[in-house]
Image (tube, rainbow, N blue to C red; front, side):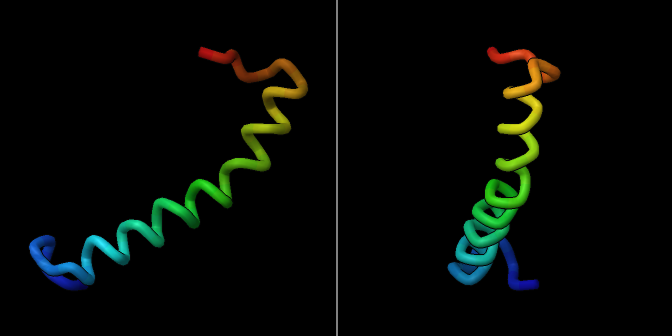
Length: 40
């Protein structure tokens, strides 16, 4: 893992955030359609 001051660290974090969003989005959409998860 590169140090936080390195540009590679920022790039890897952006990839992680995008992958987390893509992984979680279908489940959140399903829970919202069921009415299980409250909207803010």
